[in-house]
Image (cartoon, rainbow, N blue to C red):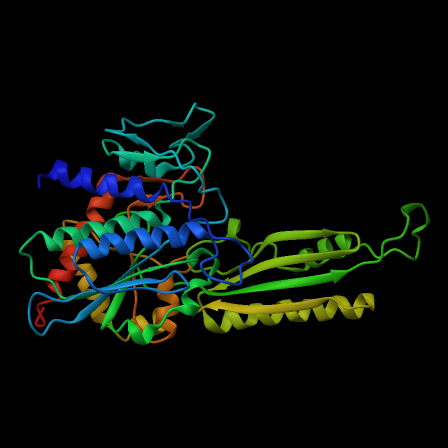
Length: 414
């Protein structure tokens, strides 16, 4: 295949995958949380079968796994993972991608032009001049997170099967509900034996990530007493007012919009209720485990403080649930997983950029179970929003890095 044909093949695959509505559903107790994820998994299973992969399994929870044995002897086994779902933060239904060839700079109008992606707000766009951009029409997200990762893995597998390149043993997994931290609890790790793995779920070209937040969610339940406001003196307990008072007790600068790099935060991401009762839903994030535990303890302490001050009956209730841990402790014990990705990028003419993930991936869950799983770029930007975009060239770079990793892994002396 020529370079143009390679690009076309990758693009067509990606545009096909984003047509599946796989949005995860907040509050789901069962995975997959949406039917579209299972539909996409079944479709991918057919593609994997056509490619001749072995041991193709689709679980009742929408987890799709497959195996490609090495074409050389004594090769390690490397896992490649991408998630099926898209973020619940923005609709993923009826995605209408738009392809902009040879981006010339400046604002990019989405759809009829009511929405724009501007270099003024997103300075990284200056680096994308001359690239082929894929954007939305401004009514949905694009779904590059993580349909790009799926397309890149599938394209790499297709090219492996149609080339003479040496490659190691490969295990593939496409997983549901990564965006709501649900799917991996149903992942049968004992049926996915690898020396190490990679999630293909990152951002700009060159990104290599092997540190992430420790993460938890917290729910604060405040009960009130509603009385006619004209006769409420010394009788009403306004749960809305209590909720606002509680929020003000938290450190004002330790929020997502005021933190970066390895700074942790409390994020009030949902506020539901009325005078009678309110639920506050928080995300708790920190890279350092000790600080992470301190953040959880602070929430509990503040709840106790307000209960004592107000003598509330019933008292404010707090529940905290851990979501995932920092993968670094596991990945650092398998330095080959980082070194090989670095080498593959350099051999593809890409400068590796190590950065912490201000979020999480399925790799964090795998690392907690003992499987090192760094995260590799997809070439996309502005995930979880109508301003999401990706470059075709960035996606092609990800495919080349995947192929190079699988080739270099066959050399045990490398």
